[in-house]
Length: 105
Image (cartoon, rainbow, N blue to C red; front, side, top):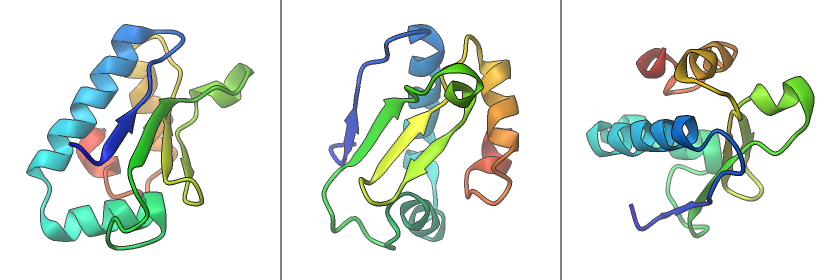
């Protein structure tokens, strides 16, 4: 997990922590193929040659804060800013093409 730069959330700390812990557990169990797909989704590459992956809470306003955002230019994954895991699951359903969609929902 030394390749993850996890930032502290501003709101809904418990839910954010649960999402981060789930992501860490998924990474530890994922196959090489799944990890390559995940890395490609987050970084645009199949290997982590561009430094660490930044995990942060989505800082947008309104409904946009509830979205999962992926930024390949900055190797970052902005997790939804939501109150509970049920809301997080709803947010993830909009990303059916992501490698972790089927596992998370």
